[in-house]
Length: 120
Image (cartoon, rainbow, N blue to C red; front, side):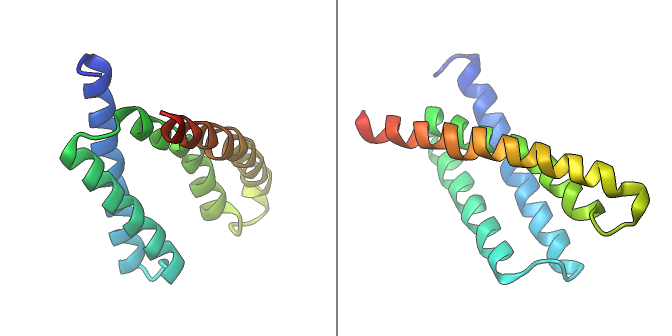
């Protein structure tokens, strides 16, 4: 993991943690953050800082980052779902893509990663 892959994962983790912090700040300023949203973001920011700050668990960190492949589709759906008829079909399609990616990456890959961590 000391090769280029490890550095790429570290950079991706730093970008993700920075994005999550910015997303939390912007959502809070505009009154969009609920208590569960804040708790979720703070948990991921904390995990990102611990993992990146101590360069630990790069394999598991990369699996955690892979879960975020569904996030852009969730954000699009949440932003455009109540914007009217012009966005209805794209918001629905985005919701379906989010659901598929959620099952594959967040449930499937993350379960595999958790099992791999526990069995090693």
